[in-house]
Image (cartoon, rainbow, N blue to C red):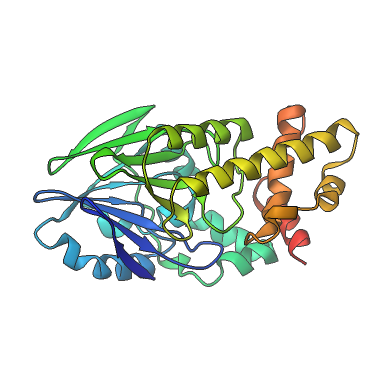
Length: 298
């Protein structure tokens, strides 16, 4: 874990690694701070808050934004229970639907989920939900710093908020951007994710804090676009040829994207494309989704 100070009162908290190793952000203004996401468990979040203590001295965290409803972006919320906790309305619904009990049950049932999340102290998590929700866009003032919350979902999940700090030319992108690893479509459609990438580029930010991976710039957003254009093309061709989803996943050569971490996520991404082309196809959820990825990781 590491703290990276950025320009204009912005900070990134970075966690290298795979599943569950998410990033967070901090925006400091005069006399107050806003935190962007907590982490997968209370212990990691406590360490992060201690690591950011110098940055928040005299500028306490009064507000927290959860960018979306995946556990690795909100399971540490209980340490900020006295703050205003903000999320998109659809994200708040997902958070209430998938709490630590659901993830613990998933780990007990599915070996790949246990491999991904078993190292986290999920039994210590007390679900702490947003107390302020919004749809579309919400503008905030953080100690004189203009901050824009924009829900670009559904894409990665049912709601995906990016946090734009125009004065700092910085965006906290949540899981719309994975730097160095494979993005994963839990919700979709993939076309919406491509639209989200274009919106990010239109914000003209030169510093992007991804949900996973190192701080990056616009080129990583463009790389995400290229990945999804590739998946749309490759999966679409195999759908039209009548190839079953599992066969399509096995048949696709990742080519320039073979070096991305967590390549097993292709299974969910191809399934998402098939569902867009055939809405009657049932979604992959819970143990089924992780079982499919587990087969790909073998």
